[in-house]
Image: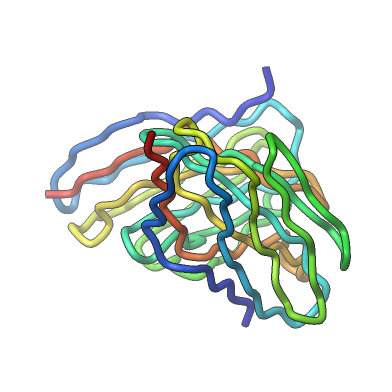
Length: 111
Length: 114
């Protein structure tokens, strides 16, 4: 089954404790992206990647890092999480000219 | 930069009513347009898309037509069901030098009642 898999689904952590949210896709898509969803703000792009070793900032990249060492994986790294990063996060992938396929989401709470 | 504006919700309808959710966009080039749906507790699913002017996307009884002259992509359904209750997002995609960016509207919640 074609899918984007994110883990974990739910995560509660404390301020300053580094964490990684994993994302993997099995569709051989070139493009991958991370979004955060907040009430009243819709979805905002954090980082995106055109292909292996090619990444760039989206609209709200501060406090996040990404890497794309393999085509299928695109982890999101929070080096020092803060409460304002409490949000619902989605990973997505696409091939050129098509819509994105989204993962099921990761609900992160930073206390 | 690119932007998408859609009507605020919630929109509350009775079953079998006609649905319209308005969406307009601003883009520098020739974007592709999408509607995504998010059911409670789930991720976003692609509902329909249109890649050029006058294209009509359709799926599961929903339709939207890419209107370049009015920069709009309104979502319509002739007869909604309770199972259509969800949040609907209008989005556009433009390929830039850096990638295939997707820009979303803020979402419109639809509630369908018996």
